[in-house]
Image (cartoon, rainbow, N blue to C red; front, side, top):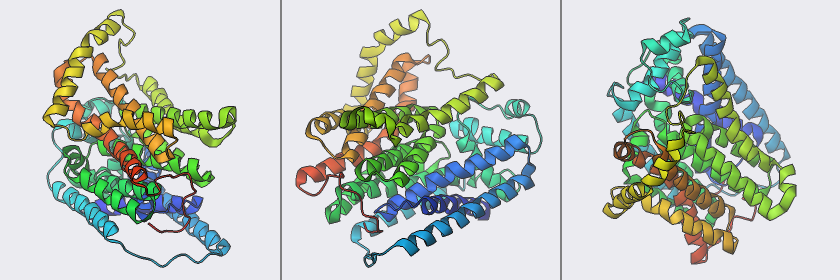
Length: 468
């Protein structure tokens, strides 16, 4: 970690925390607050950087735009906090630190330390270099006046159709440094490791409530630490950690909105859904599924009245970023190899014929325990069905159903892939499974607390004070 990456991270966190303060969002867990601050700041700051590229502002102009954006959000946050403080009548409880919170804080710091240590190596191989860093290099050239298509060709960008949020965050570090960086540009994405740990703890502690919820959240974080996909997310500059964190946070905020009916929670949920949809193609798929789950839950509970509520923001916030991205791709003439020829008559027959092989590959990984998080994803459909029948809390209902549908969608991806099946499965399955594990883990931990007799029912509005 150097000064440029530290300044970029500070800009992201300041923007995100100021956004939460401006809209008045105060989750009952500080851990959930800071996890959300990272994701919100990443999306809002990334959009400013991309806007600077599109407007041809140059490096100096981009630096001014980012600084002005951070300053504007900081002022909005201070004013929002001042309004709430003037209107508050209740005295907040005394600040207390519990062992579970200390453990989660140390786990988050350990993830950040691992990220800093890993950043001493250059980004030079694999998807990290060929897709994400190469795209950031091309954006840097475009910011300095080069033609976008020529820059993409010069840096041999693979998959130029991928969403640009990750490269925009790397470009942010370039803008701060005034030059391309080949080591520490990963940091904005590496923060997803800390955000996942904080988000899992915060979501479980909020949904389950009480000291038992905090302990369950800490145990859930401990279950994450030994998993390979989590290590990769916390150390690499790829987007899989962003997908996992985005799904986790979006599900947590939509659950919070359903429990408390606070518009500020819906605003945070919509922004987290947009962040998820902007992270990667898989993120757009999961965001759409999450939006449908939220809308379906509201339709079941409230009937047609749900269509006149902010629940419609769930699918809309999932669809707007991909729609804007697809419009840009059409202008550039880029396409995705996974969807090319999807309507071909032999694709459906191939998919049906692959069902036994994909099922066997999945079972092989589960039996060999080569993918420890897979068991959580497999358990999600069971929890989802039980949640629907027993009227479980929003955290359990939304998390379990989204993880279950996400697992089914990823199974379908392997049925339809145009690539060699075994290679694609072995290379992609661990990452795809990791996208779903944090959300499934929150649902299972919350359901376990409910079964054990702790609160576990998040229908009651969450506290408006900072108390884990």
